[in-house]
Length: 309
Image (cartoon, rainbow, N blue to C red; front, side):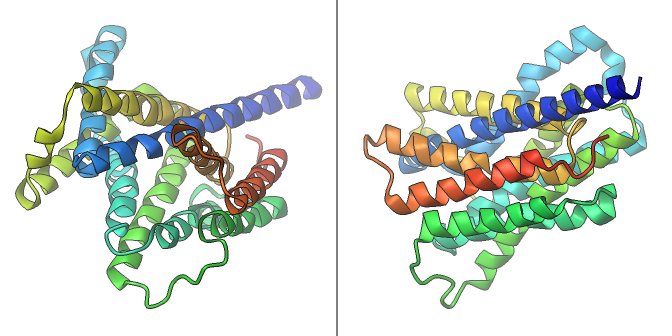
């Protein structure tokens, strides 16, 4: 009986690991597409709004016919949870990182952003009450080192760093860590429907982005869209929002937030590989070395579960 229970727990754990890695691959696909859209003059905030409502209008009818109208009647606690999830995942994570690029170099922004696994490790002690393993702590520092090696390669950086850039980057870190910790805590404490979470998080996040961008920047950039760019934006929304967050939120039922955050850094390895493939050029030795360090860190994180529940 005990052996069967251990097998069940381990099977669930590795199911969560695989789901998280799939989410990371989906997120890795986003970066090359985002560069194409940005170079075409389309604001990435517009892309984020599109992604949010793509999920809403794709998932909404399915949820309605599958679960009925009662699923849209929220009590106060769940309303707050979905609102916080939307702010953290859609607004803070995406908006914070993109806005940091207005003030920082890409290398500086990436190094700040990929400190989020370390923040999640620390937050796990107090929010989800899950103690990370020593190997996971080592993994977190290896990821930062891998990003530094791959993206900076020893070049001088953080010289006279912009304070607004640092603040926006920190907002993105809070978003990435916060969404994992909050979702994990709720998933552990009560039965949560991941599709409903996905729907409402993107609904509230999309509304906030539209409400903020409309008076500040407007939507003139959308005139640069053509059929090809619209297709790329839809594909990015499918992979980067609907599939990635669907797998990510489901994975948090099975793995601790710290583990999920560490595994999500596979995203940068996928992004480097796809960018090199699309540009038909081999990655530099620095990028290969950095990605190698990150892969080692991911193996450490996956092989050392901090808490199997």
